[in-house]
Amino acid sequence: GLGLWTGATALAWSSEKYAERGRAVFAVHTGMIVYPMLDALVLLRDAPDLLSPDSDHYKAIQRQALEALAYHDRQWVDGPGEGEGHYIGIDQEDILEGKVLPGNRLSAMGRALWAAWKLTGDEAHRDRAIALGQYIKRRLGVSADGAYYWEYWLPDEPVTEPVEREDVNGEDTSHGQLTASFPFMLAAEGVVFDEADLRRFGMTVLNGIARRNDGILYGNVTGSPKSNPAHVSSPYGWLHTIPVVPEVKERLVDFYLNYQPSPGPLDFANLVKYAIESP
Image 1 (tube, one colour):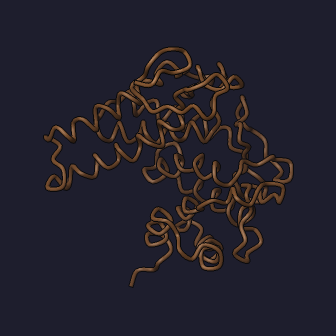
Image 2: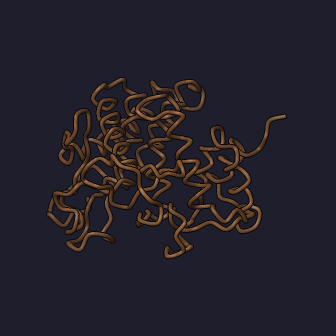
C-alpha cells in the first residue's frame, strides 16, 4: 500500500532511504530478501513435516518471492558480450538511471535467480543467472599475486590484462563479500566459476583483506588502509574459500577470536561449516 516516488505501487519491498527522489524498489534489497526465502523453500522440499510444499503457506511464500523478483524484469539487459547479461537502474538513485548496477547488486539478484531456478525449474531464471555470472567474471581483475581485485563499480568492458593491487580502488569488504557470494554459489556447482576462481578469491583474503596476518582485517578487498574499518562488517562470506585455500582459516578465525568473539548467526553457522574441523 506504500506508493513509490513515481506514484506506482509494486509487489516488492521498498525503501525511502537511498533514492533522492523518494521511495523506491532496489534490486539489491529484493535479491537479499528473496534469496533466503527461495533457498528455504528448496530445503523444505526435503522436510515437508516442517512446511509442506502443498500447503497454502508454502505456495504463498513462493508466489510473493517470485513476484518481487519479476518486478525487476524491466531492468534486465542482455549483453553486452556474448552470453552476458546485467541489470540497470530504473527509478532508483539519480546516478544509476540507465546504468549497470554495481557488482554487489548484480550478485544479490544472481543468487535469487539461481535459487528460483532450483525451486521452479524455470530455465529463464537459470539462463539469466548464468549470464550475470559471465558478466561479473569477465570484469574481475586478476593480479600477479593470483588474487581477484575489483572496484565497487565493475568496468564496462571485460578486464583482459593483469591488474596491480595498488592501482585498484577496491570495493569495501562488506559489499565485496556480497559481490563474491554469487560466484561462490556458482562455483559450488561448477557453473561459470570453478575451483581456480575460488583460489583467486582466497588470495584476495590472503593478499588483500587479511594481508597483515594478525587478525586485523582491512575494510577494502585490496587491503587498502584508506577504507573505513567498519566495512569489515561480518566477514563470514570469505570463509567459503577455506576448502581451496586453507590458509584463509587462520587469518579469519584470528579476527573472530580477537575482535568478534560473539559472532552473529550467519557468522557462527559458516564458522561451524568451514572453520571447525570434523572429528
